[in-house]
Image 1 (cartoon, one colour):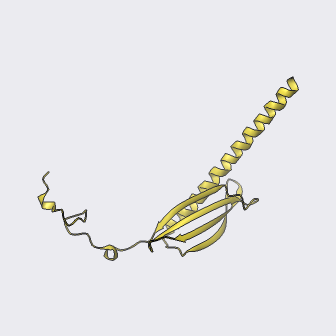
Image 2: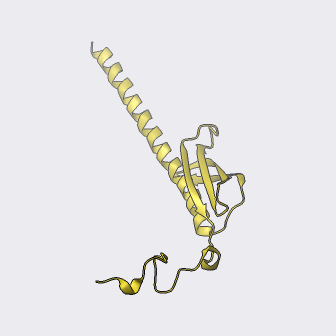
Image 3: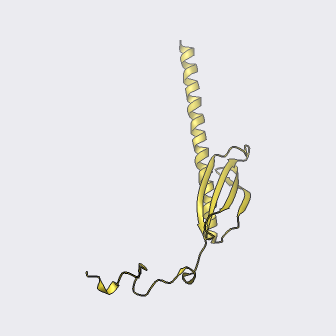
Length: 131
């Protein structure tokens, strides 16, 4: 009875450790995916549509990532999808993140905001608003 109890307890502990390790790996992989998107935003360049691959080290582990830039209905917005997998298992994506990049445009290309009306609604007279 004691041996069976110890075997069951040991099996349960192994499952818990395995689940905790997987959760940690997924968390790190997701951080990496969001880091790649943030890097694109910080660089402030508007990327071309396409795929690229890379490698990064985090938490004493080498990770592979695939970054896909997709066109959207707007010429000024790109969708970014980043998938991250451990180096030893490149097809096993543990982290996936998606984001959007917006092209910087000048106010003249979008349209001017009328003077004295920060909301830009021409039907509202800012002088006629009572406090």
